[in-house]
Amino acid sequence: MKKRSRLQNEEVSLQITSMADVFVILLVFLLKSAATGLSVSMSQNMTLPKSVSAAETAKRLLTIEINNSGVYLEGAAQTKFDGGRYPAGNTGVVFSDLQNGLKELRAKQAYIEKKGGSPTNSTELIVLADKLVPYRIIKRVLLTASLEGYTDAKLAATRD
Amino acid sequence: MKISDSGSHDVELNLAPIIDCLTVLITFMLISASFLSIGILEASVASPNSNAKPPEVAAELKVGGQGAELVVTGKISFKHAVTADTLARELSELKSKGVDQVIFTPSDDVPFESLVQWTDRIRAVIPAVSYGGIGQ
Image (cartoon, rainbow over all chains, first blue to last red; front, side, top):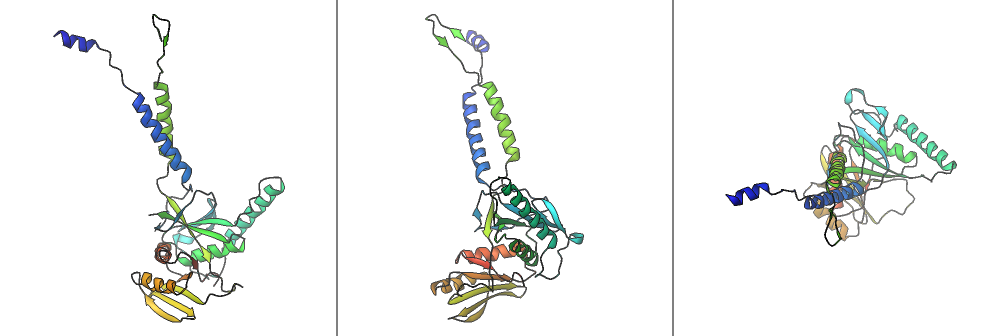
């Protein structure tokens, strides 16, 4: 009986040192994964295909997104597809709106460079395409980009 | 803080505010974290007008609605219908004969998912893949 009352009076303190250790490890893990992955923003109606041979990258590059609503350059709509259907059309023809968008971007980069900014004359870009986008659309985007000097294109896929 | 009889200070670090900060930070990072690992595939374009010397043996894989066909030109020349299962064996044979690059030409209606799958199959044997039919 005496023993029980002594136990009840004991001050119980939560051992939070180990909890702090766990939190620090979690934080380090999350910081590391945030730093190594490629961070790109994608629209909701977009599913990238899976690939086993896609290489990991953390480099931030110019992005062109293609889905059933249109073609987007850095998130800004360039070409809209009517009724969510991919256009048939001549596959050897460029997307003129996208071409103008890329031209404007080049002009901005040249202006920044002229004003003393760091040179950004990159030839690389990433094409993020929905898994259902037909090759004829990808061909036209790659052709348009290469005509504007973006000859080093990369296709994005989810690493399997 | 307690001061013992000998005059030494018994300091206890208050971990509660540190835990608070870590909880907020971890919550923020979990919300902003992307658990999809995005990778890239090099999309070099096969140019028919290139000034580069053509290879002794050139291999081209054509994929369309009717299936896939491997077209080899140069010192060796043949045209084979291939499937996803037989492609690796055919490419391995070509690799042993010095072929180090494959031109991959899907038909216009091939979806991107299928294009990536075929690219994976080619790259498993010959890593250098360039895409054909661009500008046509």
